[in-house]
Image (cartoon, rainbow, N blue to C red):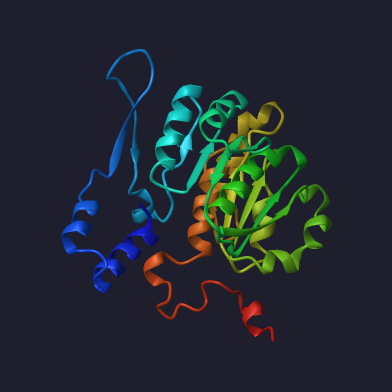
Length: 278
């Protein structure tokens, strides 16, 4: 169940199309479902949270790393039994193949290692999130962020390979950066990109360190420390290679929570430049 289903349910009660008892029965149903997979009979592999979209605005996401292909496909099927969207991160081709056997319309995003099923009639694309990378090697993490943000309802612009070794490449896109509601800056090596970006814009910058770099890079720790110690304000830092976490944060910045929509918050869906345009 998501926010829209809850609103529809309450509207049906208000219109007399549904009794209060019927609505109460639906709302009192268990908010999670147990998924049993494997040879051990009765062993619960996952407990799928069907009310997460009501609380957080988006359904439970499957983190595929460490899960078997059978577990991922069973969880995906359970989510779709109660909703329209499946988002699975850190997936393998084997896991996608297993999902595809039970969900014919699953889509594989190879670079991002993300599986998507989206059965919404018109998927939302609100606001504007920019995803920028320092180099081409950072694209897999950036694609995870971009794909997840799009599925979560954001309009996304990708700016790849605009790192500080050739800062003019970034400066050529200053107008695009300044049109965003939030910016995800993905960088390995020394991780300086978010600092440069934050010095150009007045919106939050979400810094994502990647594990791209030579030995003293320490698997992304060097970039992480650079981002945490940035002299520029307005930067928030997520974990190494955590494109998904950056997408969630950017989405919540990019659009207001459901309780504020339609309540006079006209600034949520357009930038000052967009509102000034004829």
